Picture 1 (cartoon, rainbow, N blue to C red):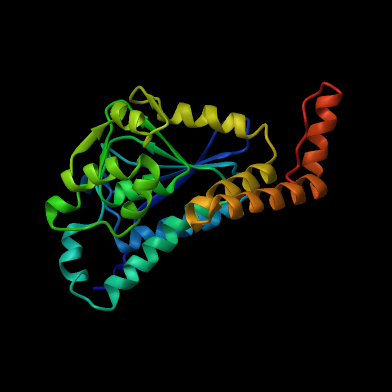
Picture 2 (cartoon, rainbow, N blue to C red):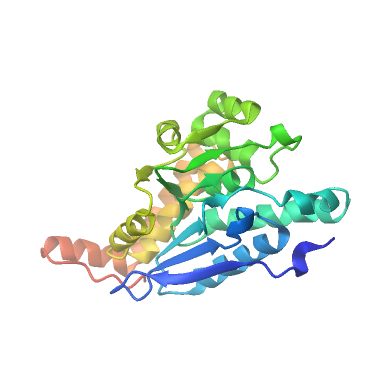
Length: 273
């Protein structure tokens, strides 16, 4: 069965008063099913990301889940048919990889707001984001192997790069879930906040981003992620950093504005150019 024609529930709203909708929140919105990442949902997420990349008002994208889960991963019921289809299942994996990689390539910081359980495809979505803020009651793990599955959306590639190979093997092989504080100690989560405080934490981060050059932020993100996602060595990654920085500093109005503002002890007025 081809899920690409299914109407997925992915909502997007703009937040942050006084910053013209600078924070966009994408929410997976099938709470009764723990927000599964079926084919339609993946494509709807991709569409939302593409639209927000073009929206100059948006400075930060936050991804979260409705209800008590971030995402419990793939839709196991639909997988019973999809995994038997020799054409559609590989295409589903292509689509989910393309969507998740768009998060890393997105010109705006993309943060995961971990509001509840995140397993299987849920942890893969988390790993695709730039960083994660977790609610204190949230849990995260792989949980593919206990159900005879294996990660196909990036966990086997990105988890070792995030927490190191030894801890990645432990988490994948055991299938256990990490509480939020342990996930922070491992480096899966950047910050843990009280339940109900996720949106405020995202707003606070966005307010800081709004004071920075959008062009500089986009360039910094692209350069940071290039070495990680392209598998480049240190020398090649440093060459890219040198080239991007030289081009930005030589040609960007924002780079010159920042220096002038510093010299004249005033707040910079960035335009993103």
